[in-house]
Length: 190
Image 1 (cartoon, rainbow, N blue to C red):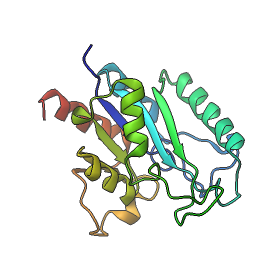
Image 2 (cartoon, rainbow, N blue to C red; image 1 turned 120 degrees about the vertical axis):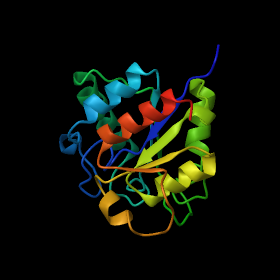
Image 3 (cartoon, rainbow, N blue to C red; image 1 turned 90 degrees about the horizontal axis):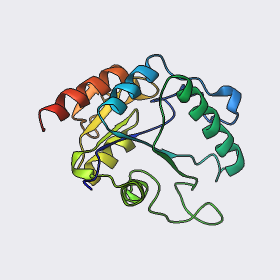
Image 4 (cartoon, rainbow, N blue to C red; image 1 turned 180 degrees about the horizontal axis):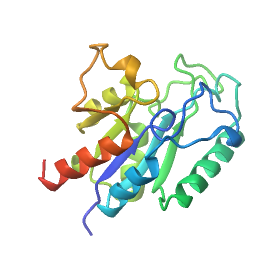
């Protein structure tokens, strides 16, 4: 069986509103048009995989149990929109290292550990996949993994657009515009 392409999505600021550190399921709110965008990608047989840095765990702002509850709420909101995620992966570690959640890891974006794990566990063809996010770290992840990078202007995207640190392949106003660009580009075989 041939591996499927995927869209690797940042969570906060890309799929849902970013209030800073999201710590309660009641705070989860989808950004406008997210359901439509993700349905479009699903219809084109993309796997939908969330990859997100969640250092709030390491910082003591939330527990992993709280993170799981937030994920359950996010998936329920997406299901109501007709969307099912293939998987969601999170890095709970602090960017500076040291135990228990402050350790050197390969799962904190822009490292590709979460993407590689998803590819192994879900039969994903990375050469036909994309990364979408609102942070420079998402663009760096895409570059490191050899995938096209889409910066959405939702969340922190507006702040990152003119940084000059790294250039995305496409700048999208939101996830819907990103999804349309991916589908159009993917249909041409890149």
